[in-house]
Amino acid sequence: MNVVVTGGCGYIGTELVLELNDDCDVTVIDRRDPKTPIPGVKYVREEIGGSHCNDTMLFGYLEGADVIYHLAADPRIQATLDTPSKAFYSNCLATHHILDAVRHLSTPRLVFSSTSSVYGNITKSGYRSVETDQRQYLNPYALSKGTSEDWCYMYSQLYGVDVVVLRYFNVYGGDEDVTSPYAMVVGKFLNQAKMGKSLTVNGNGSQTRDFTFISDIIAGTVSAGDIDNKDVVGEVINIGSGTSYTIKELAEMVSGNITYGPPARGEAMHTRADNRKAYELLGWEPTVDILEWAKHEIKK
Image 1 (cartoon, rainbow, N blue to C red):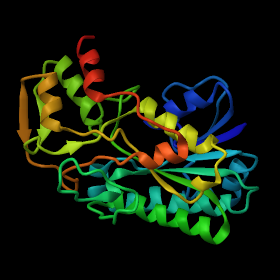
Image 2 (cartoon, helix red, strand yellow; image 1 turned 45 degrees about the vertical axis):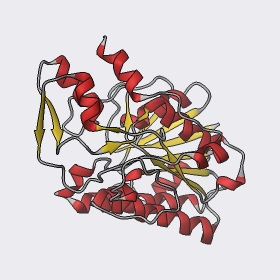
Image 3 (tube, one colour; image 1 turned 180 degrees about the vertical axis):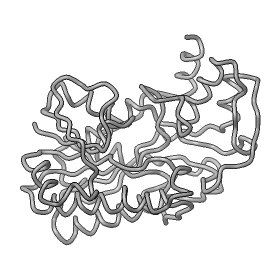
Image 4 (cartoon, helix red, strand yellow; image 1 turned 90 degrees about the vertical axis):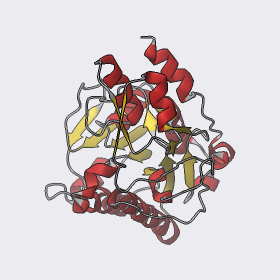
C-alpha cells in the first residue's frame, strides 16, 4: 500500500511513519528535514501551500497514494498567539490545498489530524466531550483546526472526498523533544526533574487534561486509514483516553519542587474525551494510563 504522511518529520508524524514503514511504501512531505531519516522512506521537503509548492506539484506527490495522513500543521497553542496568521497559512490553507488535490484523485482516504482544543472552555471537571458538542475557539490554533474540519466536511459532502477527522487529546510519550519550549507538559516535567529544576506549572494546577499515549494515538490514526468501513467517511472521531488528571496531581507525582506561575493564555480549563465513537467505528481503545507510565519513567 502507498501512503503519504504530511508533517511526517514532526513528533507524531515520525511515530506514524515508523509504524507504517514495515508494511507500506511511505512518502513524507514536510517543510523540514527529518531528525533521523528512516530507511526506505521517501522524503519531500516542501511547505504545503507555500510559494514553491504549487497545486500541480502537490497533485504529483499525492497521485497513486492509497491513504493520505495529513498531520502537517503549526501544532502548539502558545506559538500561534503572537502570530495568528501562521495558524491560518500552515493549517487552514494547507488543508484546503490537500483537499482540493485529493478531490481530483482516484478515491484515496484522507485522515486529518485535528485537536481537542476545538471544544474550548469546558468548565466542568470530568465532563467528557462528545463529537457533536458545540465548538468554542479560545486561540488561533483551535480556530484553524476547526475551520479545517469544516473544509473536510464540505469536501466530503460536496465532492465525495473520503475523509476522516480525528481529534487528538494531549499526546505524550515516545520521542518527544522535551527540551522544546512547546514540549508537552508531562515530558517537560520529567525533564525538569532529571535536571534538578523546579517544575513549572501554569496557574494553580487545578486544570485537568486527558493525556493520550503516543502509541494509542498512532493505533487510532492507522485504523482510520485502514478500516474498510464507509460509516467513517465524513466523521469526526475523538482519540483520547477518556480519563483526566489535574496538572498539579501529575507534577506532585514527579517532584515536590514546584513553581506556580500565571495561567497560560487561550487554554481550556478541562479536557476529557468521550471515546465511544472511536470504539464503535474504529474498534479502538486506549491501552496506556499516564499515571502508570509516569511511575515507570520516574524510575529510569
